[in-house]
Length: 308
Ligand code: BDR
Ligand code: CA
Image 1 (spheres, rainbow, N blue to C red):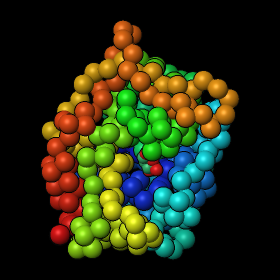
Image 2: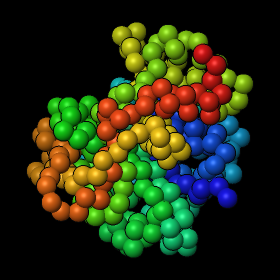
Image 3: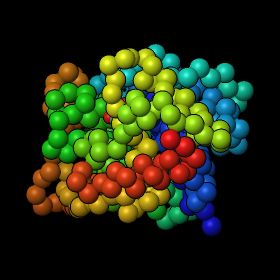
């Protein structure tokens, strides 16, 4: 039987590639995408999710709209990175609509209906997961596995000196999820920075299948937006790889804390993720030097049927 998967996402170029990867993997049954604001506002994230599913002929996968605002603070978006539309390839407006069930309700229903069966892969700010936790912590606990791309554990951030974008975007949500004691696998910024494509790699990518083709177009579109860009980091795709090919990452068990003190999100400690001693070591953190970048890229290349 295939592994049931829900992807919580804010597409976003690397989110889109991660989604395409999950769709291309025969071992997964993607039972839904839940959206959150993050890279782009929620309406845009939802539209992009639907548009990309339509484009690859997969509008059988339902999309559930989630958070428009973080639990605390204000979303800053990352359109300078992902383009104003969020995706670096123009896609026709989707013919499908989002479900009229909200993201948190869908997560609760599917996780409770099949305890220990569904894998959740979270690729954006953790607002939807934190709301689920507040509403029904048993539901999130019922996930078979939770894999999160986020945080910069004792590592320089990309949103601020200390913080990674997803944790920075909703640090309270990150704190609630990470400090909940619920087991999660965290694929953080340092780990993700091990796996990338160069401009030259991107130039030669082609694929006979719609997933790989769209993914290649998104990567080259991303490079074309800015001639100073040298590396396309596989942030969100690496979280999907973690759920597919465990040998590509070594993890170690840590107790983490996330900083959400303060009332504005302009402090550079907002969203900072640190290792603390004692407590519930519920987080399996991917170790940067334990990432097998070759195997990770091979897995991606193989599933997207990329020839290089
Ligand atoms: C994360 O931030 C977003 O811009 C990416 O989609 C990824 O989820 C990397 O810090
Ligand atoms: Ca993302």
